[in-house]
Length: 309
Length: 280
Image (cartoon, rainbow over all chains, first blue to last red; front, top):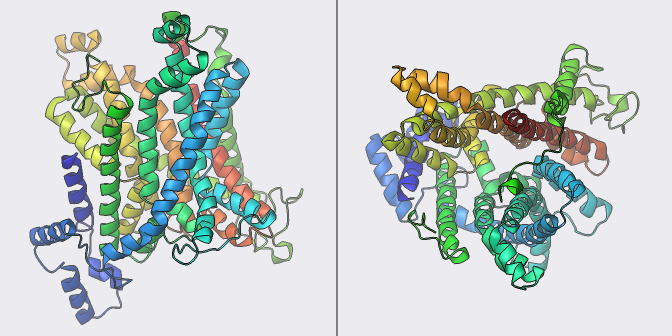
């Protein structure tokens, strides 16, 4: 895990150093004069030897200093932290929706087993996975914002000023993020539960007189939870890392929109900082998922010593 | 226990069942794209302002946009771009990913560790973020979009190939080939690869779906396909301003992307099923 993070850091740093040409020249454009270029080079530190640049960037990053954004003229760390007030509530709302819908739906579909349900489910879930989330977002805006007028569009997120409006502004984006994720998670819930219900221990539990309800929820679902935790972890990491496109559709000032702006303006310190932040979140969440395995299934010991389980 | 795990033998063994809905939908997609290339109903960039923002009709099956351009013709032209970029990206992912996966899975040991750690590092960034980073470094454009999406898909293909080769290298035919003096390269490409190709093909088909979705996303952000090339993603972005007065403008490109991605998911199913069928 530490090795992975180290590789990511090296990768992110050198991606922006091996590019042909001068980052200062790319950022300022070819019309810039020599003194401007020299000033920016010393600000970016690209006039120093590469090993020294890497060392100072890494030391800064460890202390929470990711440099100054070229476009916003503010510390990168501050920009990222500010945007978290949008991205974190959005991520929590989306993943709650995913869990609340996909687990009951998956259980229901696993129990209602006949050829018609199976066939239509397999097509419907793949269709759900195929829908681009930003198109779903547009349709949701069209339906709930413009046609039904349930949710006013264009509300801003400011928790101090108006918490209710802020939450309302996050509802449609969260639904748009959740829809394709639900299509994926339901497949895992249903598939895992169907597999578990075929196992011998289910027959044992039923024949010793436990209610079907109890066997499904306390025995089978719990055993099916492992792969579900994995896929939920991956999806949550994707969402926390910045739902780039959805934030753009709704013009929500979160991490994703910041990244799109940074890429559009070629704001290299900001891009590097964001990439580092996103990678750190993903790696940290992977660790959390590994730890959660032990809660879900006490037989699992970390470090691949669980072959006998 | 085992009879419950094996697939039910309800499908009669006819050749017909090999060609499933995925092949039909993919075929239809290619035919329509080809039609748009050879004989489009309208030129995709032909403006006709008097009929701007018209709803679907016989003359314009998907309506017209803000310049009176025929949306159906533009979708057909956009399909050419999307499919080309998707195919290019997938080719890149499969070639690099399969190569990495084959080396890692066949040789194992430190080669496996090093290559898979590298793939983990790439996977630590969500696909769209990797694509954005590459666009930030290399700049926008058709080739760069395909490359960015290609890099995005590489780790997944590498993992799939690796696990296929972990199984494949233990087979007796590998031992036989080695005993006959075949080199590692010959064993990998002539013996293991042809026997373990199915999971790679299935992953490639899913990769194509992801690449098309990714291209639409990047183009929607304005960082993928650039004007004057028409693109499904950019059409959606342009439609957003008119979503209140011209619903068809936003519905048609989205539906097209969904169907194209759906087609390649189904194709992956079909490939998988065809092989299960053959093995029975």
